[in-house]
Length: 249
Length: 163
Image (tube, rainbow over all chains, first blue to last red; front, side, top):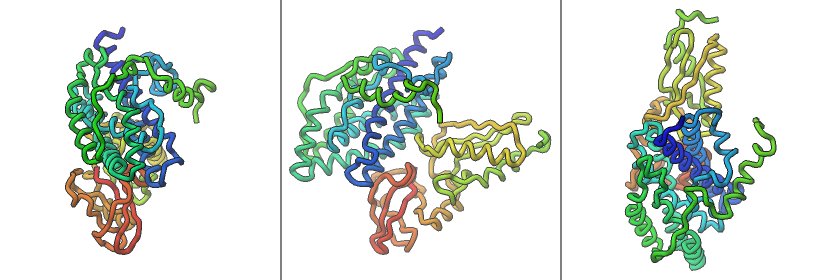
């Protein structure tokens, strides 16, 4: 029987896995479509890192859940309402500016999160975070540099960044609004918000971009209430396993 | 058939020293520091490995190649265990490995940790040894490499990121 504590830890682990997987899937959509070859490679490399992280979290969740759960069943056979990823990561790629900004908002958050998680009393969570932190360091640096390049670039790139901020800002608050399972598992993500704002403000300043005023923040992803985009992502991602159950290659 | 009492970890290590990285074939998995330990549990050989990057697609293949190399040498009971902690670092790469990398045309990783210091970006060109090089992209042909170009000999090259 799964105890209350264990059930919170399972949900938290699935939330981490889902968030990584969905952003990986989104970034992978750029494969072969990047603005230039080097950046096509960069964004798909980031996708690969995120898939690796999600696999580690799914594998861990599977051992906690027991029964017949596997990393594959958790990724391929859960429904939209069971996915616990943040809303930010399921937002469409839009143009390069929107993809870059989404990655930057997320990497800045994930960097702070993993910094904390690497000291978690849960050994497996700590090990995954410590390992992934090195990768996220690159991702944060790469996406920060792109935010500066586009924000402080041409008139058009600046305009596009403004549009991207307008599109994505409303999904950033959710990252710091802990779900019940995060609190119960002992991870209060609200404590990361001040440092995240500091990072965003510094990068935006260099990029000559305005930090938005307080707006209404969209929430729900962490507890399974998603924007309409997630269903489409899962249709793509789960198609093969749903159509040919147990297919392997 | 290998008799349990004849197995020594030294022999296993010698076999593992022949297994190469599928992405960077001049490096062996021991050069890379991927093999963390070898244990003998009765007549079972356990090889403990750690991934370079979390999402490195070569890891599954490396695990399979280890198995194949051991099977070829007569070992039948093989267990591959993957551990994450302590996290792999390029500091574990052997000096011999770094030399082989350079000969292959890949700049070897710095021994220091990642830093904001601009000197971190001075990567030596593996072709002409010039330090007048520039970063083209933080991400190269595989997760473990970045793309550089030499401003003197103009040759583009991979840099094995320090990690």
